[in-house]
Length: 628
Image (cartoon, rainbow, N blue to C red; front, side):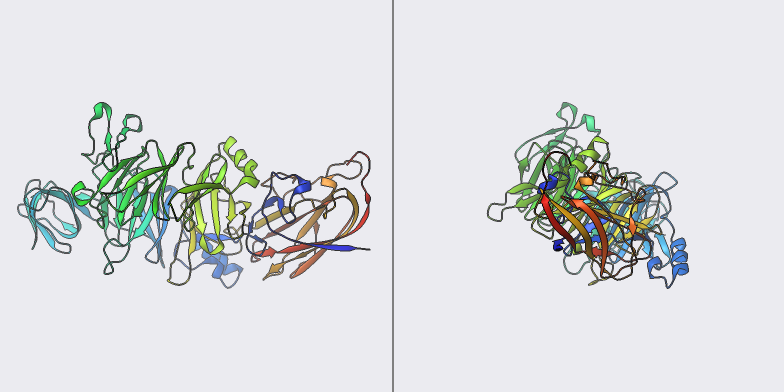
């Protein structure tokens, strides 16, 4: 008599559990599936993006292809160094062909380069300039519209020093000439200078409204090679902290009681006096202060509510981290600071009570991996992904591992020198996605009691990624910038990998049907399928861990423990008829356990989900003696 046994497909990839003890429903190899609340779902596609009509919204295959061809790269050279959704638009950053860098906005006409104004340094200011006024040079006659007024030293009593951010500058200001506006008066420090982005680096962003309800949130950005900037959609204002990080080998950080730590170089000379090498790499907002982190281990913060003011008299200050930084995140009621071998956090309200506390000095985060997932940040260390959770009662943090079941995969990447390029939290799917620099990655699902992970392999390597709403109420959309071209792609969009077929593979764990020593005659494998389109599914199976009674190995090149596989060698796959709802595969075989692998390949079908499967078998006698 045949006995059916139904298995819920969940648990993700498991590369460490013994086969005999592995829970039902887990996978031992996979490609381009994601774990979710219903089961295992094939990955959605991605397509190039520039603000032009979406290829996947085309009416037919010809229009899809035409729309794809019409979307161009962000002009310039090298990778996309940053993408961000701000004020309902996608911005992308790329090195230009003249040795600089540029910011582009996605529009209905494609990528449009953004233009920047000028800065004009001033000294001896005795009355304050106001935004939107016209400043005029008393000798040169040069003019410009004041967009920002930034004080870097002194006060408006004749000792004020700083700079103006100008738009529409005309003529050339001269050093030491008097500059005036309706309200302001000072002495020009020299000619105005064009605001420019430094080439290279990787951008990190934060959006925040420091100026109250009357002003829109502004975008703050750093890239590790030049100064930080504030952008409001029209004006780009440099963030001049006054710090000089010097060379990595020359910087010495001296610890003191917060917040009186200072940065010193050789000979203990205080170097917070110049903006010669002001190159923050990490950015965050905490207690209405703008925090900037430097690769060399320096941390500076602005005055409260004043993201461009880093004077100590305004409530700004500094911290020393103690080693090279790899990330900065706001979580719970603290600002987390990551190094490669250290994690600390800043707590408090302002310069009077900010304190830097240690979480661990024996482990840290890999560059580009820390991401905020609600109140529990996720990051990667040498062993895999970890989550930091906090205690509401005490504010302390504890670390928990998320990827124990796939530790061999992370070890394989580490030994091969493969490193992460970017990571992304997909809030709508309870996911954290990690993208390595070989085009592979993992999707971590956090919607159940225990984390679940499945790997993917893309035909394109991503260098950066972001998420955000283009239209209020429509939910976050996902974007990524290419590492090997100037294309920006929208993720989870369309039915192909920018025109290439999406190949999927999943090999379920060997299932002994609760009786590992009992022989069985296997009859049928049934699998439920949730899909909007008809799909063709290839299926194959193995019994007795891929060995028959004579211990002849299976000819399918997807053995247990292979975390990322190819669908190229599957000559013995039974490509069944197109299905929608459920499909059945006859599985004549005799043994103690069975494992089924499922394969699809399509550039037109929408994602499908395998929520459960059923194995039909008949029990036979117990296995006796030696052998398979």
